[in-house]
Length: 227
Image 1 (tube, rainbow, N blue to C red):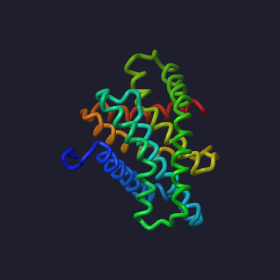
Image 2 (spheres, helix red, strand yellow):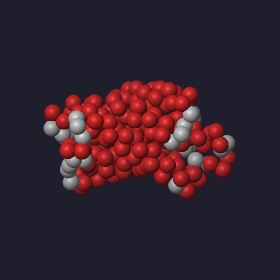
Image 3 (cartoon, one colour):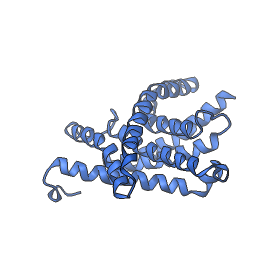
Image 4 (cartoon, helix red, strand yellow):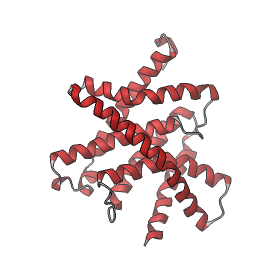
């Protein structure tokens, strides 16, 4: 975006938040309509209400992933840009609610959406600590931790925490033997996360692409360890 299009940073943040909310909705809908996702999730056995609930959890996962990335401590941006990103992050829930309003969603449902986004953000944010600790344990069990491996772990924490949380909520906490859907969610969120992070940092894609591959290896090792 060109700054000349906006009268203030606040106006630019509002417009950007609206665009990010719509991007989250579009990505969630794409995953939701994916035939493999629907097959693995057993949509033919789900009621319309449960299908809607699944879609809602996927949308919220994308929204929260955006929010966690905007506040990531290892985000490689100029320090003066961080305050703008923090302000942008706070606008995401309201931006999505406004998007729903524009789509014709009844006003009585909108406050619940903002509460759900905030609740999942708080929950997944807390889960980051457990995810980081588990990742470090798995990594250190195979080799000594290095600065590079610690950096990769830190970079992957948001997408892992959100994927785990989304998977758990879709299955209402009963996730044993349901790893196939988790892998699909993780892959979709990872791609979104990498693409978005590249745009923010303005970096070449290759280092982040490697970390996206690393997250799948890490959880394969974690799954084997459970057996």
